[in-house]
Image (cartoon, rainbow, N blue to C red; front, top):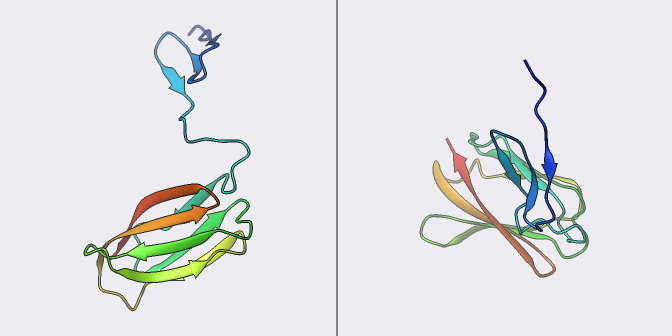
Length: 112
């Protein structure tokens, strides 16, 4: 099996490409951002989630909304790992918003 060859592109969006695939850098990745990286796990969960943020800074905040748009959880994120306890809320789909500075990241969490 031959080794694939890669071409580096000058495009601000293309990271590299080979014969089979092209890999892109999303526009939302900013090296100097306040929230460089975040991850919530396990998802789905019985209601206890862990939010990991590389550098929450002083202005990071998490809000969780139910399907009606009502805020059911809100917390300032001050450390790299934060436990989110949604176990007292009904099972279902929730939407989370993580803000920091001018950044807003939204994602879905599921309580089983």
